Length: 296
Length: 304
Image (cartoon, rainbow over all chains, first blue to last red; front, side, top):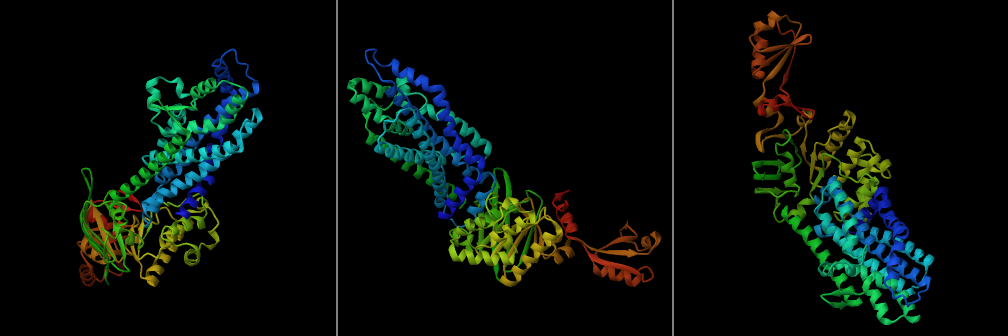
């Protein structure tokens, strides 16, 4: 499997188009967000606060910056995984997969070979994107501790695992370049909404909020947002912001998530994400084994 | 010689279409076995079943004494396949490609180094190891395809139209290598080809038509069964040829006479020595056999 992972990863980085598309996606998102959505986030944040509160600009910048990078990272971890996992479909389209299936390699090893190589390449790109995002936060206003940064990296890692597993299952059914382009477009444009990255879930209707609360990606977004903004909330608390106001802000930007009206804690979010990754990987391997059995 | 491949009553359908219909044949160890048929005759389906790529509907496939059902993985190591189109990674170097494929058979580290060295000498590609597969010529790429198929030291080499699109010199080189492999390692070669002259070199030929065997035998048996002999007669007039009473056609500076067999040719020569001053006798070609058996011709990759 080690050689397969090496082969897949090498192919990904040798394909300049695939690599650079994946790499620039989060960077483009950051530029677009900062240019077009920064002000919207700021206005929406300040308008939600009572007029009696005098908020320093640094704190607003920190809050907007944290919200911005958490949105970008939550979306990128999944969309970049879909981009990186194109090789699985390309191998089907150009017949390379036949070269593997005529050999005695187990289908589960082949499946995991694709999974881990996609995980590695997506992780490299998403960690680079995280570094850029942290530089952006440092430029606007830095409230993060070393622990926050480490937890943010852990969140990115888990979300990449989740995105890779999800893309592996969806790409399993695809066999042409056209199909993967279509799916890539749908995921890029749709995932950000259903995971609460483009718009906070709290702004959706109650029914939609309930439906979205069943999707594990939502909790990944919330984890990233919680860790990207923990420092800002700590600073607000230190500056004497009422606890109710801070909680209201957390509710409005999905730092607090509710599953059937029960508040979901940080540890529960981790459990949801880890379990969903495990289930998705198990389903992916099962599908590959079943497909292989169909030829026996 | 023992049978290395035994196919018994093999059938495979795709919806209403019977791609392979109750097919049975045997391939002897060390043999060059040719599979002929127009597109859709069932060649690829049969090969895909043998390679474990497709599930059969019924029948049995025995490879080297083991039933494919239940021994798929061990059988896969005994079969090397050269696909019609190269399926190697064009962006990777020759060495990287072969390394990743060798690992599928558990050949890694020093074992891979030794195998790579042996194959690069055999197929003469030592100087290509660092080149990207995408930058190789068609002939060079074909050599690497064959090297990939030989990585696991298979007992059976399946070649699916291996020389289509190659120049004559490269085709000659490939057949020379395959000939050496058969001679030195007693390797069985199963070939599908559209080049009739390649099929003519086979030890045994099966012609498939609509998923069934239309004809089978050695090239000589097929020639004797499905075509007659041809006499090319030089330096005679039209009247002289007509006097022989056999079908003929005028060709450049000669006439081509069709006779049932070599015996009839001999009788004609004995009875008309004054006409047979300059001549040659040839057996029918594989093209003629294919035409006689299927009603279609198959020359150089084009069904007519």
